[in-house]
Amino acid sequence: MTDDQVADFALESLRSQGSPAFVRDNARPDELVRDAPAVDFTARAGDTLLAMEHTRGEPYEGFLADWNLAHKRLGPVRDLLAGRLPDDSSFNISFSPASANRIALADAHRIAEWIAETAPTLGLPSTRRHFATTPSEVCQVELTVYRWPYREFEPREPQVRYRIGVDTDNLRDALTLRYRRALTTKLPKLEAARSDLGAALTMLLIETADFQITNAWELGGLFQSEVGGLPLPDYIVVVMVGPDDRPGMSWTYREPGRWLAQPHFYSPEMTIT
Image 1 (cartoon, helix red, strand yellow):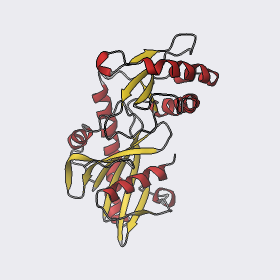
Image 2 (cartoon, rainbow, N blue to C red; image 1 turned 45 degrees about the vertical axis):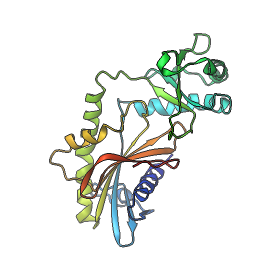
Image 3 (cartoon, rainbow, N blue to C red; image 1 turned 60 degrees about the vertical axis):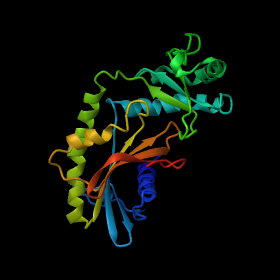
Image 4 (spheres, helix red, strand yellow; image 1 turned 120 degrees about the vertical axis):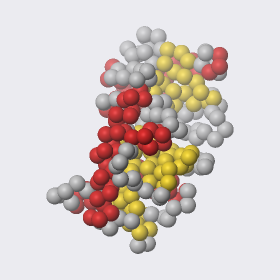
């Protein structure tokens, strides 16, 4: 996955809600301008220029490194499970932060076989029997597998997802600190692009991989409370990437001139407004 793919996905999401059909420029301002901070991307729809600034939202320091390592170690497990699990549910493999380095590639077959045998025995979340933890002979790290029946409009792929178990007691404070930092750093760059590049519109683009941590429906309030006196961008879009490293869904929280009361959800599978 590249930043370019995430940016293109965000532009697709804007088109799905009726915005102009912006096309991303190949040249990146942050690579062309060396003597001053510059935005990451620009895109055009006719004569209208959109400036885009990309950042990553992480729930704790080192999350992205943990996530990338988990994908490397557990990606083969997901491949081995293709077509072997009950097709009415998704399955989350959860493990503690900074433990992915103890999951050996050689464990993939044992982990996959254990999940294939265990998955059909798991019940509904309401029964509190919808999860099970690997015995020590399967893997050095405790992996907990959760079964979640699909909801009506939920994308069916990927069926196997990774989850880094995070202490959520102080999560709101941690997320607030991180997004406050992103807003403070990124929004002035976007505002400068209006005069420096002639941008008519601006977008703050936040990429995240933490499906289980980020409550997408609450982020709008967090953004509004933390923006303070900073210059507002025209669009704020959060793009979630999956265990396959591809953008899978997005939420738009702001469009020109207004905050959205409910974020606009987009995925290639289904769009809900």
